[in-house]
Length: 95
Image 1 (cartoon, rainbow, N blue to C red):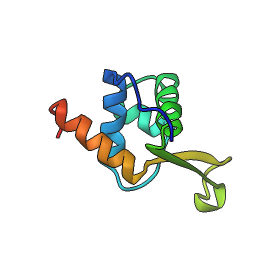
Image 2: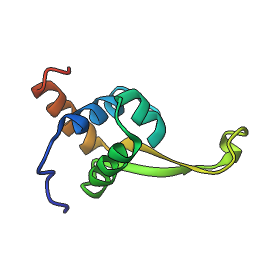
Image 3: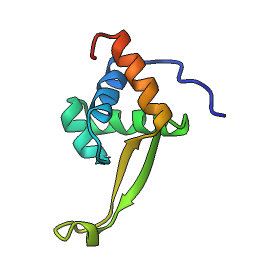
Image 4: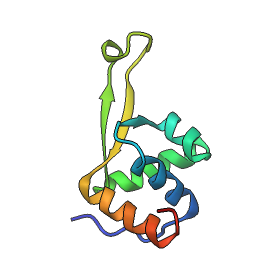
């Protein structure tokens, strides 16, 4: 089992809010736009969430989206991550 996330920063809360309010997997770029944070900041948060099993990622290949030139990595909360995100968002007045 991965260690619990030690630091829940404002950008982390914003990323969790973005992920918790969508049912479809999102690429890092869309998460960055929706959460209003830099892509590099968001990517580090996504890595941390995924290493703690709050998030799962997969590849969206160009055949799934004909206009895409290369595959994109997309992210979605796991059931554990969704429950943790909702608790954090509730504590911070976001739900």
